[in-house]
Length: 249
Ligand code: PGA
Image 1 (spheres, rainbow, N blue to C red):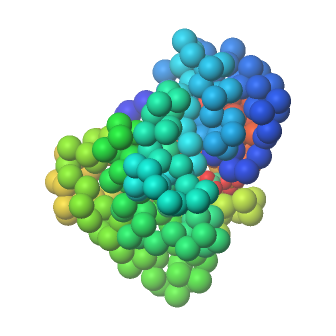
Image 2: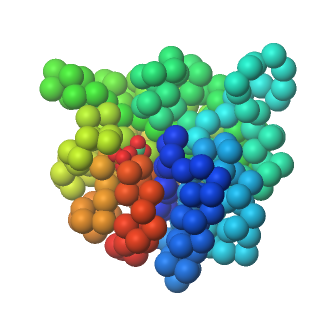
Image 3: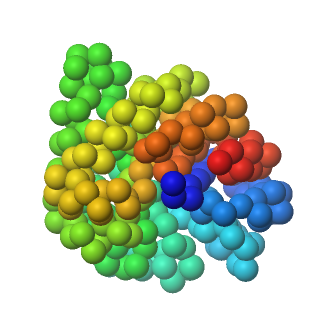
């Protein structure tokens, strides 16, 4: 089994002072892991996070980036603005972006492509809503998100991508997918990648689970055959909880 990639998604939480406290507390707690540790912080915390984690095993990510290098795009951030700061990862297409900010498979593709071109590693989020799952459309939705959202992504580029399977009904709800539900969905997603990129590339691809993963349920989820890590929201805001997840496997 691969080592895991454990990423915290702070969402719109923690000002600069709070970020400083959280990162400082986290550094000694996760320093001995073989897993990859990432914190995806608000834009305003990036400088603080990069500075404090220098020389540690914690990598820093942003939560979005635009597809253009510069221009009249008020409120957006270019990929090179992130790399210039020392940011390594970027979350793309989170369901909150898709639901509240009109993100589509097409904009996800544009952002992913641009992030890769700039040398960032995108964490691309996919996942079905409860209605889609209950109406038997889960696989159709996941297939569409992979086919459309990765349309122009080459095999070479895919090697620098992390995928996060996050069922929308499990995000921030306290309802976690069961170990089997998460593993089965990820297996399916991997099979769709295999159709396009081949089995070897699909097996090498890191696919995380996200959605109410916490210090209590991480062990079970991370022990599953196809779950290569976690994207953690709420529980990543508490250093001890996030560290417990990091050390779960
Ligand atoms: P949650 O969020 O862990 O708070 O459910 C996960 C995510 O949205 O990435």
